[in-house]
Image (cartoon, rainbow, N blue to C red; front, side, top):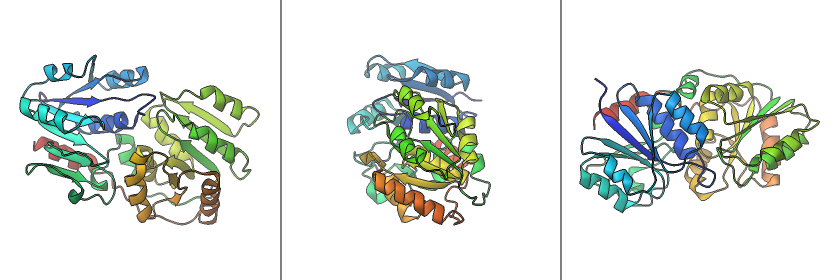
Length: 324
């Protein structure tokens, strides 16, 4: 009988991006057959509210942070994903008596979680300060991807000559790197199609429309669902993405990747995947770094890469959460 509640406390928007939301949504999809899922958010785009409700999850809009503690009961499981849920916040939840899960990628605080999930490659328990009872789900065996991408990860894809390039810089891209990269790609006649995907909190749409004028190769998509996102990635032979959740998605599909980092919280995923030679590095996304990575991608178009994601992370995570 599906009665155990999991409250997912997460936010997403223009300033903080949508990465936390996307990976929480992925985890919710993995475990929804066994739990009642309740998203609790202070900041959330309308499109995401629609997606939550369409997936039969519950949603509570939070006005003040202390109100969250009045919602939860000792028999509930709480999932936190956000850099502001510090040690004091976690301890308060444990004092209520709840089981606690934390999704984390920077391992800065002392943790009171019963389970810590970090899906960056090569991360170690030694990097965490946690409690004796804390369990860990670390590395690519526990990657947080939506079902469409997990299924693609089970299929081997052969390399193809590069004609179509896919570009996505997350849900907000408040530095507008999408436009910067698109301007570079537009000058390269080798690309027959340039797919630009932006998220629900992207505010520079008009600039992309101007860029796309008189260039039929450029196709722009905004706030799309996971099935369309996966299909667009699959239609490309090269993807240019940051070292965030979208990198995990394109690796799962099996596309050749150019990746880099532009904020510090991407450094762990970037550095660890770089050590695995999972992508062509564009460093900090300077113009020269991007151009050089594009050239290497064309030179090595037929190079095969190991498949780092096996598509079975949902089964592993569900088992660990049920054991709580």
